[in-house]
Length: 151
Image (cartoon, rainbow, N blue to C red; front, side):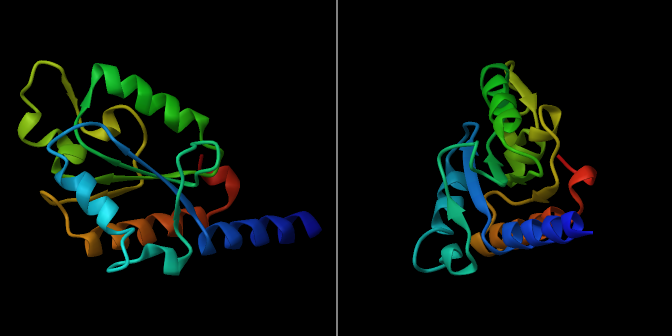
């Protein structure tokens, strides 16, 4: 019984202060700039407890933008595997969802979901910071699920 209570406490703590890892697979940098705009004082996601970290071992949330090609697809998969469970992924922008305008290029694999599982999709070219923040909060609801459901 106490283990269940502890598991609930840990899940609630992760929802209240998630650590986010942002990875840009490479594109026009429009989505990358909008994700970084979420960290500025105008939108200030830190007021919700969201902290941007550079180490996948510490991250609960992976925010990915840009098109996936063969080279950065391996890096993305490696980052995802290094994250501790439970983990959630947010695909940002049209390029992250489907490859966007670069989808016909010879080296583009496609959307992020071709390489790693995606929990939330945020469409747009580029999406507004409000939409990205909304996508992050929808992804955080996935962290509230029991540990054996996700990861």
